[in-house]
Length: 419
Image: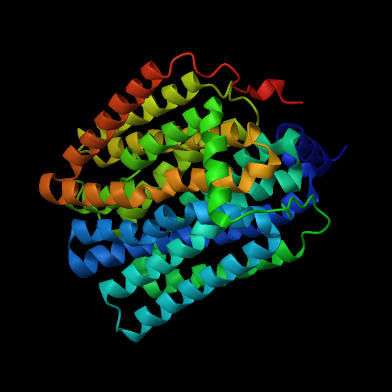
């Protein structure tokens, strides 16, 4: 057996989702595009803070980007159940490409204003409202339920590889060529996604042909979530952590400049450090070595995330901050993957799009609220105190959830029991 065959067999053994050709096509396109996404994200946060010098307006970027998810995620979940997911993704990815190219043109023209970025963030948020539940519910059509955990873990892996590479490249381009090049590179990267989607053939399409009034279907979906205690516990956990603990994008540029005295390259390395931590967590998860999917495991990951947010609040040394942020990345990624897997493995195909719409709502739809208050807190009290508040509040509310809902998860799924 040659080295190539050995590596291939080991990869298929460790990550069984890779045996599905359609998933490989999807993953290859996403792996390129996500690097561009993180390049744009790095440049966007830096540019708007340079223009305004306002943590409050920096927080407004998240408000504009994620408010559409707060308003329309439940409607998006219904539509995801009704239409072929591949076609929906072709549309959403194409619009995201246009958005990135438009920002690049605005920057190159020299006419960019902060409200341009806010409007474009709102457009991106509206598109992502439909894109996110579509992508999440597409995995099971590509790999089946038996390899779903591996697919979620591998998707998280490429996201986190991109979190390392994207900010690093973005920081270099930002420093030497300007933000416009970062937006241009992101726009061009969507070509690879569209090619990957075009190559996907003959997969298991789940479309619900017999549907009701859209509001009735939303009600049915919410009733399904509330009647399933495992899904409900996972959703409530994501609601708490997503709203309180996952607002580092707002704090990080201010923390880098005002506390750690860093420039664009130092800031991008901080983002990459979070990506490295997340990558380690996602590889462990994708290989199936992550234990169970119970509420206790969710609570443990949330508490470790909270602890490292608090520890970051006491940090004034750049290298200690990199270590602490890497730990934040590791536990935030593991927590998100656990929630995603718990929900999908306990959801029937009939409700998958609507349940993932609820997941999108609590994962990113509550971000405007979190970003708004985090922006105010950072501006009034500074980044260190805001890190502390986010970590402490997350720990308190997760503890309350764990105590009050003890014993209400008798049917939680363990990865080792999946057929």
